[in-house]
Image (cartoon, rainbow, N blue to C red; front, side):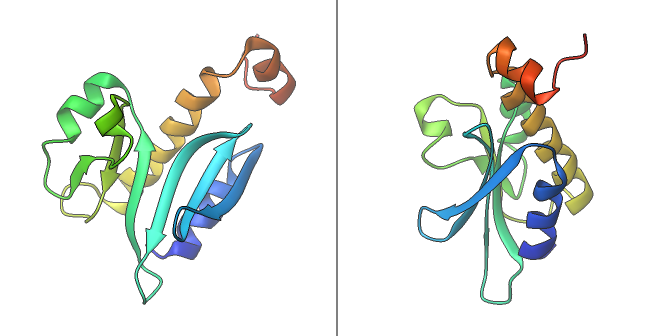
Amino acid sequence: MTLDEYNAFCDSLPHTTHVVQWGGSHVWKISGKVFAIGGADAQNTLDRCSFKISRMGFDILKEQPGLQGAPHLASRGMSWIQRTTDETMSDEELLSYIRDSYTIVGRGLTKKLQRELGLLNE
């Protein structure tokens, strides 16, 4: 997957914002809360991507080849995985996990904000 494809996917999710920070990482947020962090190599290929996940998912995925606890996040007790290769997780699966991360982070917003953004199924 290219960095452009990653960015286009994240941009397709409602109410997202994008910023390049932390040494060139492409950071995607919903209402100011990070849900995905990606970076590319010199050929514009996505070479790392971090996303929030459930605690159980974290415990399972962190042991798989090409996946690890996300640096600076998992070490602080947060359930974030970083994909460094597609050995275990395909691009399609990665996009599904990014969508799930978006949902998890969205559920962490206040109910009022979730309502304003249309994230609640009332």
